[in-house]
Length: 177
Image (cartoon, rainbow, N blue to C red; front, top):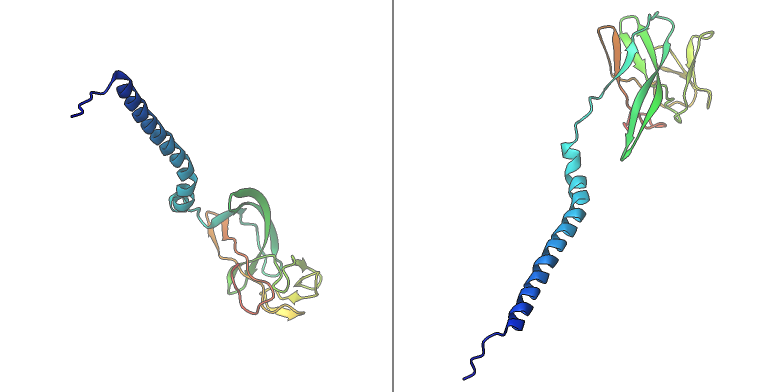
């Protein structure tokens, strides 16, 4: 019969071994926690972020005549993944008889160039490829495949608000990008 009692050295070795197991487990837990934070934030972050109101305040609504559009520049915040930047955008605002206020995107429907108003000829002109548009947005001439793109707008307390959208150029239908 071999009854041996543990010696003090064996008890010390066991407790040292237990300490290392617990210490390794705690360190492993903290490493896993540090690695899990970015993963969990990328999975659940979009759910927790506040949705920005799609309406952008452009500013005070200018005086509009029925035969002359007004170009308005305003500041907007563009967000692309983690890149946020303040940019200046333009819109064309027109008061059409019977249709009320119309807001046009400044981007030509042909290849995406910015068009201008030619007051002498009373039409919008794209300098890139010679497309011409009427005040109501209809294509008068050129390679543009569709009328000018309109943007949703509203007026509250004399302030103009829009929803900025981009559309695929060169297509006969408005396809949101």
